[in-house]
Length: 216
Image (cartoon, rainbow, N blue to C red; front, side, top):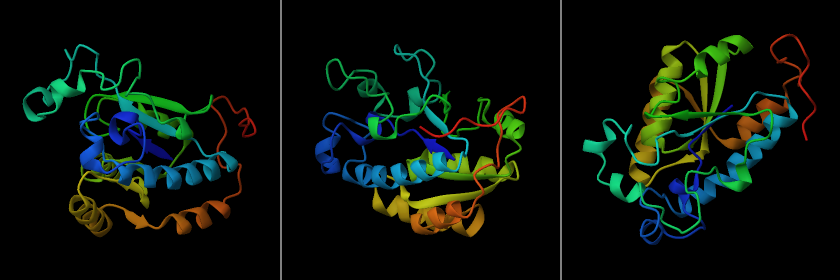
């Protein structure tokens, strides 16, 4: 399972309309993000129950913005992002309700795709994984880029329909339609959960052959 960029920078520190939230969190999707958090939380809980490997991504840019690369000339929000919107609050922290457990892997990334310039694919190869359940944000940005790259690596991809979101509902809807038509199976959370219930719970072992620890 892959949880893409579920940090406070992208949802704000509380549920509120997006036009309110972006006053303090320039990249926030507002209430749409918080609605997805509840769905992602349920899928994560089921994944841990079945001992599925969980991967998280988050932006890995330096605080001074030196390594922003193309974002410098493409994103009008770059300067706002580099300023902490809330004093003593790390907006790049993964939302507490979705916090990684000790065995989960957090992958910093510099570009939209979770695969570009990261060790994600070699790790999936090591695990013998042939498929990926994707959640996170934003649908038209990092989710899309990651799904297309996963497809390009011949992974079978399922996108949790209610477990991803965008700042614009039109972008969200059109991207899901496009992904489902070309690169992935976009499925409702209930269908994903039913599928996971049917898994044996011992599909994966840790490198070296040791069985996975029981979920907390």
